[in-house]
Amino acid sequence: MGLEDDGIAGITGDRLPDERRIEGDLSDAIRPGGALWALASAGPQLRESAALAADAGLAALAEEGRPRAVVVAGVGTAARTGDILATVAGPRCPVPILGHRSAGVPGWVGAADVVIAVSASGRSPEALAAAEAAARRGARLVAIGAPDSELQSLAERARASFVAVPRRAPARLSLWALTVPVLMAARELGLVNLVEADIAETARRLDEDAERCRPDADAYVNPAKELAMNLAGSIPVVWGSSPLAGVAARRFGDMLAANSRYPVVSGELGEVGRGRVGLLDGVFGSLAEGQKDIFADPDDSDELTRLRIVLMRDDGLDGDDANPKPDTRRADAVADLAGRRGVRCDVLPAEGGCALERLASLIAVPDFASVYLALAHGLDPMRVPAVSEMKDFTLGSE
Image (cartoon, rainbow, N blue to C red; front, top):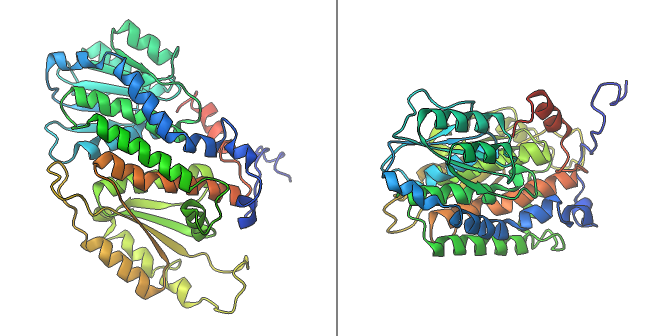
């Protein structure tokens, strides 16, 4: 029975990766609307979105003072913007920030709270239901999504702030366009210290990483191609050493699953240090490494699948009162444990002078790596049949 008979026509790709595919002609991926083009435009995305948010009248949010709580409603990449807000605001944020990934809003939400509904398409059922519920309960509402969408119409009826973010790529490739308005809304509420220099430096960082990861750069000078081929054929385990790095780790897990179709374990070391670290001693960890044939052909498809650790390391900033320096002992321990068991580990350090830039430094290169890994397998990261079918079943969810 063929793929078409099974109801999964359109699925293409090769189980075995081939590095030659990412060293050849990548014109489809770099054309406007392609995956690499979308990632390379992250810096311009951020700048454009900041300008759109500045013109959206968000200053009105401050008129009623500090809220009791902030709820960021959405699913997928839209939900990830809430995680970013929480980590940029830091543990000393004066109000709780809650990410809400289902329809409606929590039962306690009322007039004292702020709801930020996010949907790249402007038609996510979860974001629409959250915006409607917030308006009905009298909460302050901010909506972020595509112009001329259902979400914009709902926001206008509720007389709420709306940031119209043009949709030029799938939501997962538009992270920064969706994130910046969320952060700027929180800035108006007095919850984050986000100055214009932070936005400018983060955009510059994204520009520089896009240049480093450009398609015509060979793998030995392109960190994204190198990371992609390091992960090829493995089970990636992506761990972040701090709450900020944990957000980046989960983001990389999202991108590897959607773009590269790889199963991934991801999270923050604080929550995995006593349980999931046992993977290092499992059948894909030290047990697989112990049975490795040093004379085997590295391209042999019968070779055992092994773990590959990606450790996103954030050592924090001196003098950052909002985000105290993380405890680095778990990161040191994981690198040591992996090394002693023969499990390969890539360490990605956070760089930059503010939380937002440090987060961008951990996200940009892995984003590119997820696309290069897909291309090495002959996969189209812009066309994921299972995702499209899932959206059909769930009536156009994000």
